[in-house]
Amino acid sequence: MKGSFDTPTLTLPGRSPRPGAAPQTAWQELSLDRVSVTFNAGQPNEYRALDGADLRVARGEFYCLLGPSGCGKSTVLNLVAGFIQPSRGRIQIGDQAIKEPGTDRVVVFQDVTNALFPWLRTDENVAFGLTLQGVQKAEALSRARDILGVVGLKEHAQKFPYELSGGMKQRCQIARALLVEPEVLLMDEPFAALDAISKRILQQELLRLWQQYHMTVIYITHDVSESILLAQRIGVMRRGPGSAVKQEFAVDLPYPRRPSDGAFSALYARVEMSLQEEVGVSLHEH
Image (cartoon, rainbow, N blue to C red; front, side):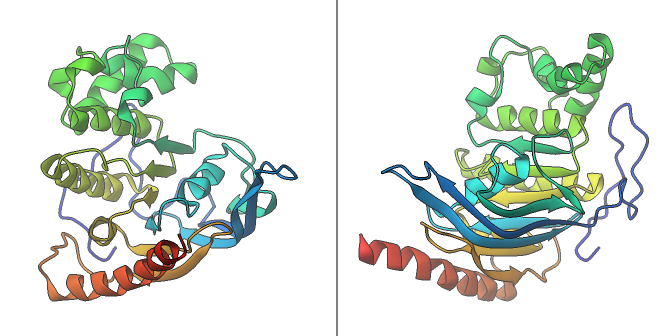
C-alpha cells in the first residue's frame, strides 16, 4: 500500500490475524448508484437531501467526504450504515444490497457523551457490542481490556465516562467499534469537538489502526486539512438540497503527511476552491 507505516501488525483480541492483502469476504467495492433521499415526501416540509448520488469506495480504502453544512454528508453515512433507506437508487457492498444495520458496519459519532453509557465502566462500554452478539460477559470484558491496551486506555478500564477526557471517550468509542471487527468504519466528524492536540493525536492513532486492521473507512469532516492528512481519496459534495458528490481528489502523498509540504499545500488549494464554490454560492443566495 502506498504510504504504509513501518509498524508491527496487531491482532484483534480473541481473533486470528487478518492477512494484509486478502479480504475476509468476496466484496471489493461499496457503491451508491443514482441514490436519492427525500424526507417527508408529499408533505409541505418535503426535503430532498440527495439526488442521483453516485459513490464508489474500494475495500480497505480511507475515503473522506467534505461539503458545506446541510449537503447530505451524514445522510450518506446513515444510508451506508443501514439506518435509512434510499427513496431511489441502490446501495451495495459487493453485490449485496444494504437494507438494514449490520455488524460489518459500525458508526463512530461526534457526540461521544451520548455515544457511551454513563452507568457502565470503560471496559463495559467497549464490551457492549460483543455481549449483544452473545459473547459471554467474562470473555467480552477480557477482550475489551485487550483492545483498550491497543488504543492507550488500559489504565482507565475501570473508570466511568464522566471520569474520561473527550479524547479518551473517543478512543473508547473507537475501541468498541474495533472489537466487533467491522469491515466498514463510518465516522461522522469524530474529532471535531476536541482540542487541536488531542485531535492530531487521534488522527495519527486512527491512521495506525486503519492500516493495521485493513478496514474500509468513510470519514465525514468539514476540515480540508484533516481530509488531506487522512484520506486516500476526498469527495466534495454539492450544497443541498439535492446534493451529490460533485468532484473527487486522489491524495497521492505518502504518510505521515505534513501541511508544510508543498504538495500538501497545492492539493489543499484545489480542494478548498472546490468546497468554496459550494459555500460561496450558498452564502451569496442566503
